[in-house]
Image: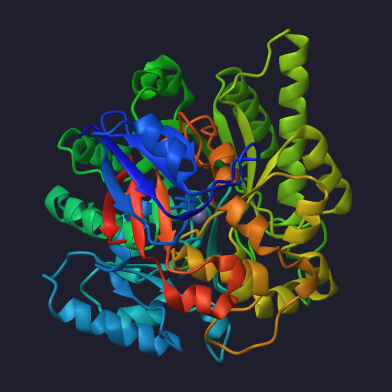
Length: 536
Ligand SMILES: [Zn+2]
């Protein structure tokens, strides 16, 4: 029985040539769809020896593709100190004190997810608070958005950071009135001064945490991800892959990766692999809204001299984008502020012109993506459309950031997280979570996209005119995300020849309330035709 037939279902295929179907047949060896249509024609195509699975009227969609996730960081979140629930710097310090008490002296105490925007005093915390909690352990705590590192004096000393240390390009070391480092490092270049000293978790533990997270993704209906991380994560995943323990499809987008290595063939080597592929590179144009490091055309509200940070100098951005486009890579540029979007689009426009001048046709794997696009000028929206740049967005950010968007951007917030406008302008949308910054549950994120609020808080919809329709949101989580990974030939719709990756929902989402969609959860998840979670 090398074929599996799912029949008696309500399939929304996302394939324009056949939007709805009753059944699909998947070939076990290749994991690809052999036939799709009504019960009779699919059973006929699959032959009499096929295994039959009765969907009993349940709804089937293509498996969800999370177009922006940090997988290993999501896995680590459960291991390190999680400061998400802390309401002050002192509460974080208490967690540090407890962790330090059971950590050998001199070893690192690491944590994440502190968020000063939810503390009464929104000031940056300082090293002194951590010094009091853990004087004999170096401490490094990432903020919720991952763009600030809060460290104690011992960590600064280990890194050799003093009043004399100058800011690295694209980063900042915050200092007090006398020029001493306060314990806050802004953006990758500065955070890296300390981060590189922290030894990674043992491979055994890292793999265990990864496997738990992968299983949780399957329970959420996710069958593929675009993992934005570095080469070390790729190596871990490759070892899981080699042992047959990688249960879903991963497209790696490498950050801070040397292009020559990619050029040397790392890419070609795995392009035929069904489960693990390297797709491209991630470049940071700026920081984040919560850290007030997103690069702005006009200064932040109430802070006239702050225009944010360009995390990659403009000239370097132009060179990177041009070289990556020549290599036919997917290019994902993190751009939250409107200046970051402009600088990124300038580089893309230049790269496109360069390709044309060279007479090089754009390769089929080349994709330009702006990640987040939380604020963008109207002329640049037009440019995104004209240049075919994809908006890779995480609708839960709109819900989580509504207060800080109003506080830090003032009137500009009315143009922020403008997903509906992007959709109507014909800009391709890909949806994702940005986990571990937010949770990865696609149903909750789709709720945020269509309701512009979260299912728990009871707050009114925020900028409801920017809500997506359910159809558009589901498309962004399936075929839209596949396109953003340059994998629309393999994934994103239930079509003959593509992978048999699907999610089964207990009820038709178009027939029930968004609240019910979230509370129902996922019935089952199918990868390559095999039931990998739940039952039907
Ligand atoms: Zn991210």
